[in-house]
Image 1: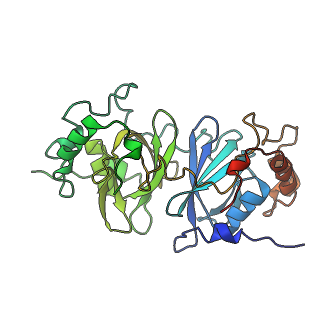
Image 2 (image 1 turned 180 degrees about the vertical axis):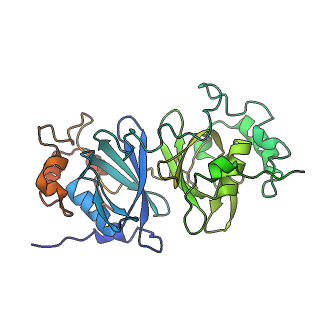
Image 3 (image 1 turned 90 degrees about the horizontal axis):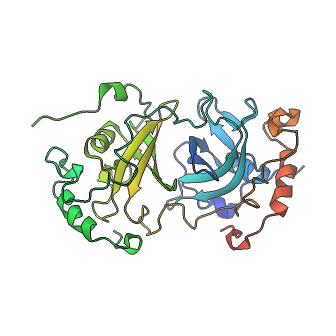
Length: 166
Length: 166
């Protein structure tokens, strides 16, 4: 039997941490739910691509972990994208059942640190020249003036996707 | 002036890496787009919660980085959730313009490693009464037979525009 390895073209694009890992975000492909964050090395990614079932590297157990093998909560791969600096993967998956080992659909469900911001109408984005970040105590030592600069820019913004990039 | 610090109840729930960081996934709150992955320490999270503008810790520059200060591409916080094991945050944000410094809306746009799986009808998930996780061979590390299952799905894939692996 031949042993396949990760496509060299893909491998060359990965920017691994000192443990040889990249972060992998799993997102339900149709609903957009962010299900979980886990880790992959080259071999985990190779297995995922070859088999269509998402396989991670478990940092705590130090072993490969094909999602759903013990729980039945399989992740079927739909697509994978690598981020701009090569150290994070976005896996679009079809998640069977709960992604979280605690039984919740995602690993983030019911674990909010804050209540959702007011309104679902985008009102959290400042419409005036007084965003929360412009308060003196919010203007920390690193961003003393940019809050104000931003207020002006934000009010004028139209198609920021094509706007200036640093 | 008083200097605030991260809420002790929140701080106690964080499971930081050796550099004192947790991963932070930013997701557009209404569309579900996964925008980027970055990092936060306690202070970055504190600033984010206090100001409503997302602030990360830049590992490369070793400094706090309030998203949008130089680009104008601000992230307004809508809510934050911590995952089940405390080492990843999901930030729901309202992203102004491009999240990626390259100018793309997300850091993953146009960076697919694989074509999207066939169809939008869930056909990538086996439709038989044979859940992958229940079969004995699925319990092995290498999942040798599931490659076949996936290959069949792959053979049905369309949309070659996304097909080239770079």
